[in-house]
Image (tube, rainbow, N blue to C red; front, side, top):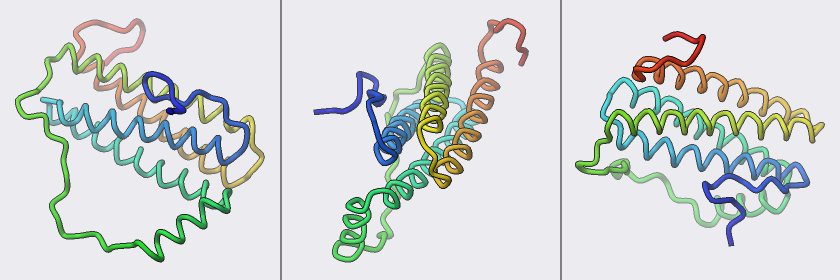
Length: 176
């Protein structure tokens, strides 16, 4: 059974700090997967670099939220320590796995749709994280969320810049 709705977004029924953070973690996983897919299909190196930069920050957010969950959930910390103690293996020197969609480069119209979808995801993350801020008094959570919200707002601007550059249509008063 999945906790998320159709596009992988959390259902929004969390009722404590750990579960608020788990919702945030789900959102970051969705973002990482989406960016990974869009990067693999992107035919424009400049756009791919921006998407990769954003995906790396989403991975950082994943780590930040998971660390907070471990601090707020004793059982999660216990499971983490158990895994690290009993199952930890060093990273192998294997080649990094990269998603490949051979021969499946996308057309510009699809790229622009992906960029708009990514902007939507960033805006949803901001709304979700600001909602969590309104529900918690934990200073570590508040600081982390404020840092992440700042990154997400930056991502909106970076993605909008790409959209403005490659979309032939105008978006009202904003200019490329």
